[in-house]
Image (cartoon, rainbow, N blue to C red):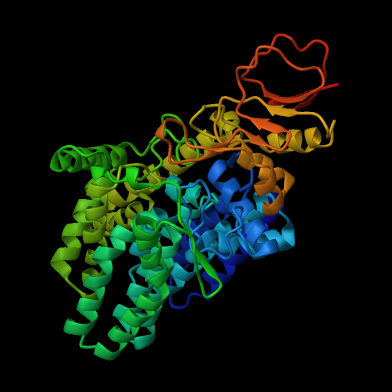
Length: 538
């Protein structure tokens, strides 16, 4: 979204909320207006500027396919889990994207817009809840910063990577904890149950998190809160809605074939993401768990895992002092032991389990980071009783945020838009323009996309809008190179991908060559330049 509309929307939403506050000081109303304005603006402004990540392209292609044909790109009818890379992809966010793609077409804008809007809803809803339960004004501002202004939380709110829906759902879950603790009504139990199921379909990496959290929550509701009837209702809701997940796991380890159930496909995957668990490689499991815990500690401390879409080079995208503040907050929660604190402790316990068992990356820990940011806010709130700390934290936080903005919008502008790192797969819109232009040329000749990066086929599908039927008819052999859990196709019809070592160019073919690959024998070709890419043709 451009600068003008981003400012107008951010100002209107923030102003409407701030003026609705009653019995509060002008200073607080102005502060919450400023915080919310920045939070919303930093999500809206140019959210389609960053290059398209290959997982985002896969989300868009499948959403487009499901919306038009009721089948994913491998022709599975309404799957409960996408086949995608052969190792699967979570279904919830692609389903949310469908109406946006149907109305706006398949573009970077339409695929990212839902996550941006959901994050803005989370901002407004969280503040409504915090005011309703009469949280302290200082804590409201601190939690706003931790949840919505830390660079990592801004980044994930502009990415259509399907697992980035999970942090937003966890924020909604924490909001519901507040409401339930303030007024323990049955509808909030049902709301929490629904959120548990939504989390299960948003990111399969957090099934292990839910295996811990869910029984703790219902044990507390049934045994200690004595809300037996609604606890049982919640369990029934989760069992029914998550039954396809159980069948999916059984199918992929026992039956090993696609299953149709009530018009829905439970897919069999060619490979799995089991490699994300620390004990998947065998060896000393205790040693692997300890080493992974250390790696997670280091990652949470430096806030950078080298992936450009979550943290630019040299940048800590997390809250500085996250671990220290989290520990302080955890101690505060244990000492208070209110109803809300008990529920938040369940999140903390489940997060520790995931930290130890799942390989540490910012993506794998995206939900854990939200939980830690909540505990950090509690810790900072206690420390903020010292005025010097308050002023220091405010100044440091603002400086930290603006350093992030400088890094994101200026210092690392080129690699954010298009990163040629072989492990990155962030491609600019110019790449799409080059593909669309080349598609119109010499349609009977071979087309080559020369690249050092994998999975280029998904960008072709994204920018051409090829139907799943045509794709399955024309695709070449599915490849899983070097034990990868991500598939690739070297060919779709007359298009060839991932060819970076051609010795001689065929004068009757069309080539898309990125600027990081140097080709000598091109003088006889016509060319058209699209930013970082050039199309050569005759």
